[in-house]
Amino acid sequence: MIETPSPNHNARPDGQPVDMLVVHYTGMESCAAALARLCDPAAEVSAHYLIDEDGAVHRMVAEDRRAWHAGVAAWRGETDVNGRSIGVELVNPGHEFGYRNFPEAQMAAFRDLAKEILARHPIPAGNVVGHADVAPARKMDPGELFDWRGLAADGIGLWPAAPGVTPEESAVPGLLARIGYDTADPAAALTAFQRHFRPAAVDGVADAETRAQLAAVAALA
Image (cartoon, rainbow, N blue to C red; front, side):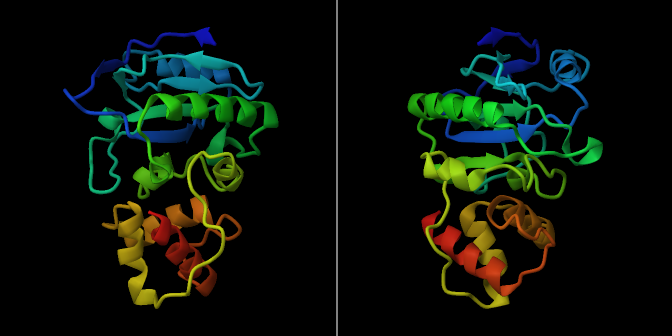
């Protein structure tokens, strides 16, 4: 663990347990650039941890403090996502600068860190989410290349064992809301759901495969 403290944090709300883990990619061209931004007081952004592509883990904000990683976000009706979550950034250039696979060394480090975080805090599987899940109209990270399915097999997050019974298209907004998505922009919420749970085709279309997967995830939520 590399201590790389960021000045960008404040107190969590009194009595608020940490019950979310939010995963990001940095969306910048290098680890150094991401660290510089996350440590810049003028940027007013931070995360609890950053994991480089070689697996090196930087601790930036203590877990008992509120890091500033989610921005305007909501999950299961709660809007102070920063106040209740741990934020982990993974170095990746993102969709703007050449989105690519997350190396195994990076994913292994994330798995180890996530298991430690989950052991320390009462975070249900359905609250292990990506930035796009909590801010679907603004964000795409960590994106469709992130191995949510493999992580769920290791006990990190959730993934249904099989698709559900395909619901009617009219049921889609309600199922998204049951999982936790803010459905003010239903198309954005559905696209975020696909990035997480149906990454083979992220097109915002509520096709039968997406609806079946949606029903299966909602049954676990």
